Length: 113
Image 1: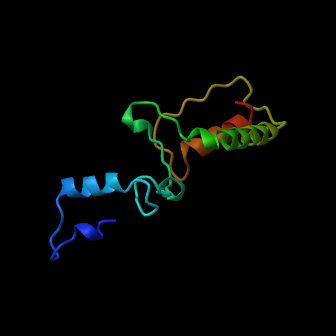
Image 2: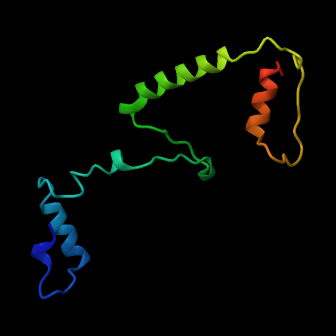
Image 3: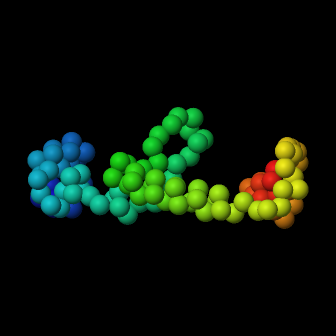
């Protein structure tokens, strides 16, 4: 697409590149209209930005909800008969050496907490 703009090895100006890209929108080699970057990207959602955004576009919504339903059913089936911590609240305050808070929460919930 940019080959016609390069003359004598000189770099074309940004306005010339923009005009060329807009002029060639229907062309299959145009990266604006014919990109597959969405399919090749690893999408990461961060809560650190302070605003909400969808994790997936609507085309993947059904897959997400099917996966979510399956995962919740698996988690529900993990309920153990051992209810030693039934009606107990656990507060974790401090460093967890050799484990994570997620693992500790899982163990507590399996024990009925």
